[in-house]
Length: 463
Ligand SMILES: *[C@@H]1O[C@H](CO)[C@@H](O)[C@H](O)[C@H]1NC(C)=O
Ligand SMILES: *[C@@H]1O[C@H](CO)[C@@H](O)[C@H](O)[C@H]1NC(C)=O
Ligand SMILES: *[C@@H]1O[C@H](CO)[C@@H](O)[C@H](O)[C@H]1NC(C)=O
Ligand SMILES: *[C@@H]1O[C@H](CO)[C@@H](O)[C@H](O)[C@H]1NC(C)=O
Ligand SMILES: *[C@@H]1O[C@H](CO)[C@@H](O)[C@H](O)[C@H]1NC(C)=O
Ligand SMILES: *[C@@H]1O[C@H](CO)[C@@H](O)[C@H](O)[C@H]1NC(C)=O
Ligand SMILES: *[C@@H]1O[C@H](CO)[C@@H](O)[C@H](O)[C@H]1NC(C)=O
Ligand SMILES: *[C@@H]1O[C@H](CO)[C@@H](O)[C@H](O)[C@H]1NC(C)=O
Ligand SMILES: *[C@@H]1O[C@H](CO)[C@@H](O)[C@H](O)[C@H]1NC(C)=O
Ligand SMILES: *[C@@H]1O[C@H](CO)[C@@H](O)[C@H](O)[C@H]1NC(C)=O
Ligand SMILES: *[C@@H]1O[C@H](CO)[C@@H](O)[C@H](O)[C@H]1NC(C)=O
Ligand SMILES: *[C@@H]1O[C@H](CO)[C@@H](O)[C@H](O)[C@H]1NC(C)=O
Image 1 (spheres, rainbow, N blue to C red):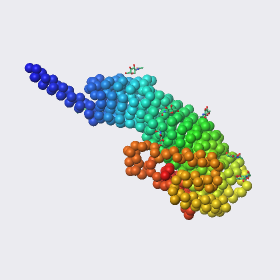
Image 2 (image 1 turned 45 degrees about the vertical axis):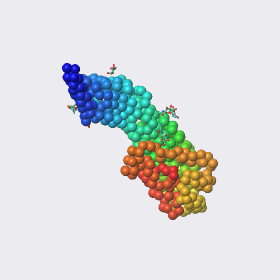
Image 3 (image 1 turned 60 degrees about the horizontal axis):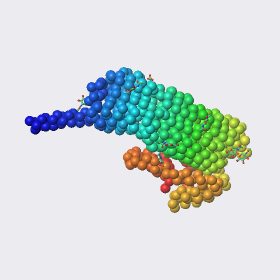
Image 4 (image 1 turned 180 degrees about the horizontal axis):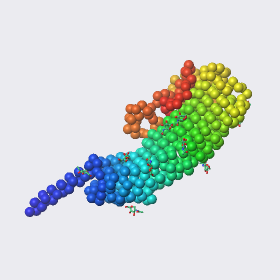
């Protein structure tokens, strides 16, 4: 009798176990109503994709479930008003909220991390309780929302892969605390009053920010690819710690009157400062030493760059003001140098257009001799120490030694994950990939002046 009961219990338990296992491992589970939710409630961990049906109940409260090894999708649902779970903690894949016009209550107080968090065409929920510290998200995509703030979302992950915040016309504040962005950051199409604050960002692979009133990047040190800032109203675009940009540095159509980039030493692409109606001088670029190209269009009256050693490509200056075109010595320009000023105050008009590879002055020859010595030194060891010695050779001010220290900060160590390294090696477009040395071969004797590369291939290296 007892034995029979035990067997019976065991069978029941076994069936329950099987049921639970099946429910907790279902490639895709669709939640439509309370019954579907109840089925899931016994799972702490669900493996697979959870989809909220497009015709679900208006209030979906999902208890019990803590971890989803997969995606969570709520999309194209005009009924859903409340989505909540007091237990949801980790969703390893993508969390997608898409086209939910009546979602007003999004309550996920224990949510800590997800691979990707993607909001697309959703209104700002009037209740959104996920403001706990410590959310970790590898990718954050926010598109076409009515969000006003992206600050409550305390994304504290040290490192993110992708940040994409586009077409959110009411967005006024972005304040996210990630330390590094290993792939790209794009912010555009927000409110004209948008203030972008990325107070802890030290490194980004690529950074495009446009449309807003202010950009504050107090710790940004290096951007491996291109960086562009466009249509920002503020007169102060602040990146006081930036030392290196591996691609173009574009600042266009801004209210900028003064740059604050006094640590910036090297821009490997072209530096394009155009359509900034208030920008008259380059005094905030006091350390700029090597630049791939220069394109300065605007009311410039002083383009003196005291630390400039080399423009690897072309320099084009068009000023609507009186400008001394000798502010930038044509001998530093390896490509062509074209300078047009409304009123030229140059003592030497021939400086206005110097064709490439011609008319070397004594200074240029001296530079080449220094270059040969430097090249030999670089060939011998190729270290930054030698780089410093070379700079000493051209008698740069002593404070420049301070600048080169910044390069010892190993940007190429960003993203220690092997996964990323592998991916990088595969697609040949790597954070870690170092095709060439820096300083580059433009400096070696007999090398051609480089054309003004739009997309430089070289990456930042310290060897
Ligand atoms: C998976 O979930 C769907 C709907 O949620 C259900 O119809 C199906 O029976 C489940 N499959 C398993 C193996 O549990
Ligand atoms: C929601 O609908 C849009 C437009 O029809 C479609 O592009 C999108 O893929 C749908 N989302 C999901 C998750 O099915
Ligand atoms: C939001 O949803 C949660 C969980 O369902 C609920 O407790 C709370 O009362 C809702 N808030 C509002 C304002 O509806
Ligand atoms: C953006 O969201 C609005 C609703 O807020 C919607 O009407 C419009 O179709 C969406 N646009 C795109 C391009 O998705
Ligand atoms: C960001 O920097 C501030 C100090 O400026 C610090 O208090 C905070 O903990 C940092 N956040 C993260 C996620 O590291
Ligand atoms: C940044 O802008 C440049 C030029 O428009 C573009 O080529 C690049 O793909 C953009 N990068 C991102 C991450 O949007
Ligand atoms: C910078 O501007 C140039 C010229 O408009 C453009 O070709 C290039 O793609 C831009 N680069 C970035 C990173 O925005
Ligand atoms: C947003 O910025 C881009 C790039 O600077 C610019 O072309 C565009 O006109 C701006 N849009 C608005 C609405 O200001
Ligand atoms: C930038 O300028 C605005 C005024 O336009 C000022 O309120 C703000 O404090 C400045 N920010 C920085 C970081 O200098
Ligand atoms: C031009 O700017 C440089 C560096 O900012 C400064 O030293 C110099 O005095 C300025 N020249 C004139 C004529 O204003
Ligand atoms: C223009 O600048 C050059 C180099 O700085 C200087 O030698 C020259 O005197 C300046 N010309 C005028 C008219 O200020
Ligand atoms: C960002 O990358 C730099 C360079 O590798 C590293 O030193 C720093 O610790 C990283 N910061 C964070 C918050 O991960």
